[in-house]
Image 1 (cartoon, helix red, strand yellow):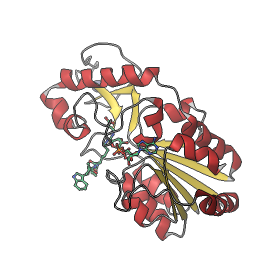
Image 2 (tube, rainbow, N blue to C red; image 1 turned 120 degrees about the vertical axis):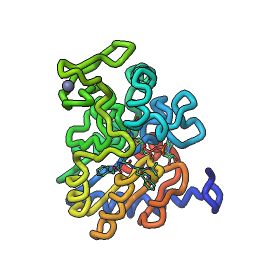
Image 3 (spheres, protein in one colour; image 1 turned 90 degrees about the vertical axis):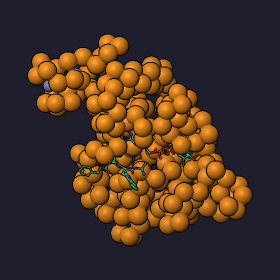
Image 4 (cartoon, rainbow, N blue to C red; image 1 turned 60 degrees about the vertical axis):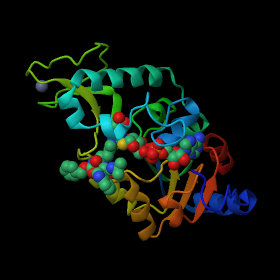
Length: 245
Ligand code: BV8
Ligand code: ZN
């Protein structure tokens, strides 16, 4: 979706020194990422042109109802996604975010992604808001399991079915309170590759902004977050982030 003003690229020169200056002065940097940060690693996003996972919408399959109705189908969909994600490598955006972590006094990465690529790129202080596709857990007793290659969902000792350890639509987010709290404490938030449509993650930049943080957004297009961003950089995260350094 092209934003209304056409592909406004902004005068990067005019923006970069401000952003660099603010990043240098920052005491506590939070980076919030969505599927767009992994797009250049070859992982489909949810809502872009190349979005969708094998013609299925996450809203239809990433739900407890879908799993209850057809556990084998939902499990297969995750095995299909795991195969793609396992082969993916972090891209320059993941590596640059891991570099920022080492350069600022205090840092927290909050990601909506479940692809483990930020960890693979060396980031340390991470909240995986929506879980991690390489972990599994029992749908009944919550017992944690590691990677499983079975083609159908195995059964736990308690008799419950195993499921990916991710947060489905309609499920609560275990670390959301911590994410809200930290977002209200930071003074710089960098939002990368999220359409800002999925709640409650989408509220985090607004909380940071209302607490006085400097908000920078990196995205191909405008999003609801563009309305409050101090600077929006339109383009590919893998290319733009390195110029931030
Ligand atoms: C909850 C894990 C309550 C699973 C995911 C009606 C209105 C408002 C809200 C709701 C509503 N109905 C229901 C809700 C709540 C719902 C929600 O927000 N729905 C949305 C769809 C409207 N939220 C929930 O259900 C959440 N839980 O609210 O619980 C509750 C409370 C207490 C007790 C019980 C219950 C749970 C949400 C979590 C769902 N799980 N993923 C899986 O992946 O299988 S969400 C899924 O979407 C991923 O995590 C993904 O990361 C996330 C968000 O999408 P994005 O990351 O933003 O990805 P998207 O494709 O949308 O955008 C990509 C962006 O990148 C684009 O802007 C694109 O331009 C940009 N881009 C692309 N390439 C690049 C790029 N940018 C830079 N460079 C590039 N190269
Ligand atoms: Zn169990």
